[in-house]
Image 1 (cartoon, rainbow, N blue to C red):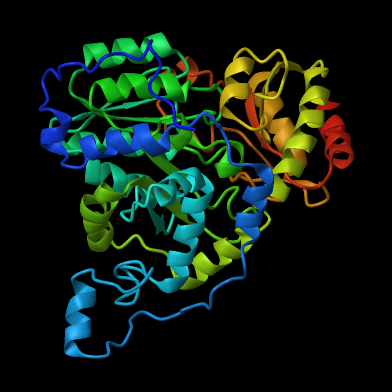
Image 2 (tube, rainbow, N blue to C red):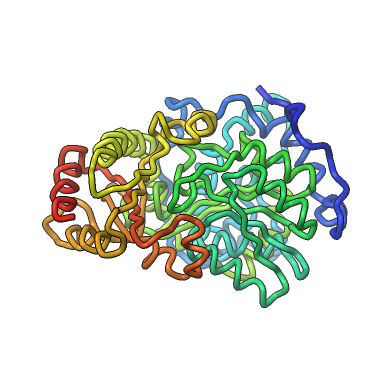
Length: 452
C-alpha cells in the first residue's frame, strides 16, 4: 500500500541560494510523483519467503567473459551504441563490457528486485512500461559512491553527511578541490539534520549510513526524507550494513540506495563490487554518462560470483543475526567492557526506530574497552592468531567473523578530533559476526578478554 507524506512532513520550501530542483534535474518532479505512487510503502520489508525465492532465483546466467560483442550489421551496431535494445535487454548490454554485460545485467536485475520489488509490482498493476528505478553494478562500493556524487554534484554545492565509512569521509573532503564542500552532522539526530539544512541552503545532496559505521547509530530515514524532499535535495542511503534483507530504504523515502556488495551481498570475502540504485530517468542519463566515461564496471566473472553468493543471502543474514544476539548479550556482561552497542538490544536507545526500519538487529556489534587502545590491541592480537575462529580483518558481512580497530584501521583517515567527537575512541572495537556459531565465538571472546 502506498502512503502519502504524513502531516508532520515539512511543506515544500523555497530553495534559497540554489535553483529549483526541477530546473536543475528534469527528472525530479517525475520522481516525486513516482515516490508518492509506488516507492514509499507501509510495508517496511519484502516478505521473507518471497525475498528468499528471489535470491535463489531460477539459476545463474552464463559468464559472458568477454570485452566486446559482435554486431549483426552496421545498423545493429549504430542502434546499440545509441542505447536501443530489444525485449528486456538492458541498453548497452551487448556492446562493450565497460558499458554493460549480460552477466552484470542479471545481477543488476536481482538487486533491483530485492530493493524495490514492490515498485515493479505496482507499476505492472498500473500498466506502466517505463521503469521507476534503475540499477548499476560497480567494481567496488567506493566506485559506486564516487560515480554517484560526481553525477549529482557540481561546483558551489555542499554535501551533507553523517558519520560515514573512512574512505567515504575522505572522498567527501577531497571534493573540496572541485568547489564541493563537505558538511557533517549527526544524522541520528533529526533536529541536527534539520538545522544543518536550514543553515546551508547550498546543500545539494544528503548521504547517510544507517546503522552508522562503526558506532551503529540509526538515522530516521523516513523523517529525514521529508526534510530533503521539501528542499528538492536527493537523499542517499548507504545500505551496506543491513543488505536489502534487513532494510529497504526506498520504502522509507530514500532517493538513492548504495551498497558495497563486497560485504553481505557477497558474504564469502571472494569478490569486491558495489551498486547504485536510483530514479530511472537519472540513472539512464546523467548517471550512465559518468559510468560510461569513468569505466567503474566490474568484470563479468565478479558479477557472476556475486550473483551466486547472493542466492543464500537471507539464510546467511538470519543465522548471523541470531548468533550476534547471543554474542552481544555475552559481551554486555563482561567487566573489561564499558559499553556494548547493538541495535538488537531491547534497551538500545533507538530500539523503536530499529523496529520501524529493520527486520532484525543485524550482525554488527561495537564495544568499548575500559583499557583503551592498549586493551584493544591485546584483544585484537589474540584474533590475529591462526588458531582462532575469527579473523583480524577490516571487512564485514562475511561467513567469517571479523574483528578490527576503527581508530587505527577503517577510520584512521578521519581527523582525530572528528573521530573522537563521533565516538570512535581508541578503545572502540568493531565486530562482524559470521557463521561459526555462538558457542565457539563466545568461548574465544572469553579467552581473549581474560587478560584484560
